[in-house]
Picture 1 (cartoon, rainbow, N blue to C red):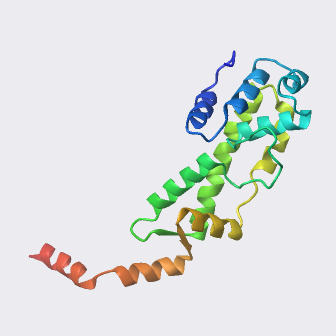
Picture 2 (cartoon, rainbow, N blue to C red; picture 1 turned 90 degrees about the vertical axis):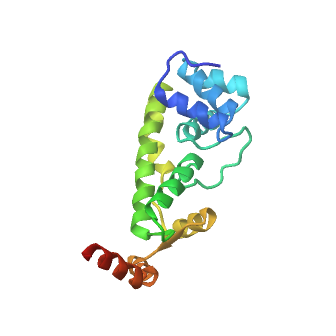
Picture 3 (cartoon, rainbow, N blue to C red; picture 1 turned 180 degrees about the vertical axis):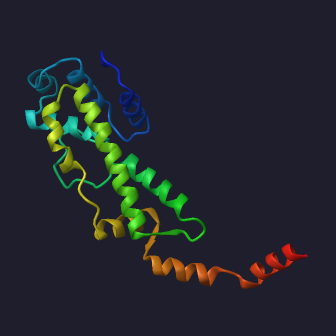
Length: 187
């Protein structure tokens, strides 16, 4: 099914479906709502409850996977596409030390969440679901130290204090190379 109204966010959602991060059913369900079908009509097509329709639309808008019959469970802090972006940004910021500070990790996470909230709001408005906008904040909880430790372990990233980074910089700095560099510039 294709939506009658197209917004740029739909291309991103379709890309995530092609990558296997979202399901075709998610997009079909969303596009039915975009095309003006009521919750009742969607319920009849998929044999799901009104609450499940809303949950599927919210998960799709926030780029989180959903499948029919999926149990509730907890909400992940970042969607899988955002986790991939988080890892990429953290690796770029880490330079050669392969680590970043906790405050930098929280800032990256918060920025990705804010971007995703704006993205989801545009999708929900296109899907004629303005009543779900108020629930968006529940889909992006604040990052905690526990989450940072979990994601760092899962993505093989080191998150450390700023003092640890300073110590690493000092210990990996080769004074002889620096001295040689400055001596060669003075000649």
